[in-house]
Length: 307
Image (tube, one colour):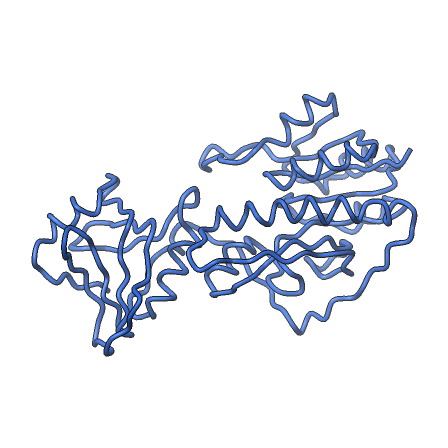
């Protein structure tokens, strides 16, 4: 029987682990992460799935620790798979499996190598992304591609919407790739890294809105970091305003010297310097959720500067 040690986390980790088990791949060990107390856990648990299937599970701080490497070496797996596992696997681990080590990445490699690729693709205004199964090498997300599948990013899709599409694509890519990997007939193709770039992780402070940007760039940031991610934010009259959802206007007017907030007909708007107007649909002021009507009442007939 073909065997694989699996490093996995998040929804992609669960869906892809299920694919392996459905395809009768023996999984003697799953390596995952402990959920962080400072992170909102909105996704499925690989650890729970592994326990349900009576699979031994480890959650080491360092997967490359000598004792972890030795434990996996003793298992002599045919494959090593990484499905949204958050830590890099070193050369000693990658050398263990007899038939290769493979990672599922949430972009159309070589684009958006590195961290949080779905969020970065939306921030940068892409209209598609996808899932890529590729060979793992020491350089992150740089190995040969086994297979990939594109998904659309619609103009108002939030990151969580796109992540759901990518998760489904990842499952399909793995399911159709496994038979060829198992029988040795898979044809891998090298990446041209000059056609993509590496992107780092993002933190809550990266959600600060730059109001000198175009309305589209603000809209893309808002939807890229909308809940369950930390959300986009700005300061309004000394108070933090989280902007959780926006809608772009149909028309674009003349350029303005600076952005400002205003209310009209019980709705809230941000007039951007490029002449376009964003409607602010979902707001939180100083930690309290507000309806657009409530915030419009607060603004009144003023034009509130945005910086």
